[in-house]
Image (cartoon, rainbow, N blue to C red; front, side, top):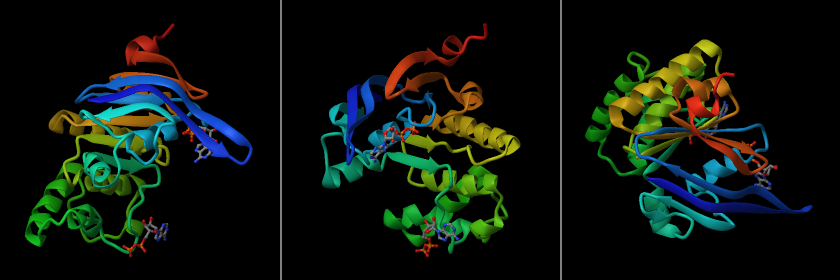
Length: 232
Ligand code: ADP
Ligand code: ADP
């Protein structure tokens, strides 16, 4: 469902060219939870920005559902990007809006009617376990609850892929466990493809089916989690 072929990304900087990603090949299957792990600077964020079309590769193809998102632009790119949703380390919620309004926001942008929005928001609230918190503001929520809002908002328009950008890195270990459980649950229930980047091995071990290990812009190893991270 997602195919990256021979991806290279070179940034032009004032100190010259910087190769952030080099010769990466990856294929991610529908319904799988795929992890990309690496230290800071390995190229993980660049990979995520390539996957959601925010960044164009210098060379190579990014095929999502048969569409080369590295080639399209304008309305076509926006259309392709509607299938791809994202959650963030720092949640990126709208602080002056309630839980309900945050989740409803992408539906409003998509032109969904008020009555349909209300129904969909209730479904999402139940799915992520936020019943009773509809009218709260982000500042009144715990970190885990904020990420639940982020997840509900990301799922609002039924994406095919959920990209997770260090989604548990700002959370304590217990909350991390709970959010990872929720992602597992959503993957099973909805068959949603999940791609996550992290620098934390335990996140990969807990929920990923397959993993790619990045070092200095290259994928140095990939495969099933149990095979890549075999205990000695
Ligand atoms: P990671 O997410 O694994 O920390 P990044 O993709 O953020 O890695 O960064 C990979 C390399 O690319 C780093 O050397 C970083 O400084 C550089 N880089 C990332 N984004 C940019 C940018 N917009 N402009 C220039 N260099 C960048
Ligand atoms: P709106 O246009 O819906 O009123 P806001 O002004 O509440 O939006 O927020 C705009 C963006 O600024 C949000 O995406 C949020 O991430 C950020 N932001 C606003 N207030 C805060 C805050 N107190 N702390 C951190 N980020 C904030």
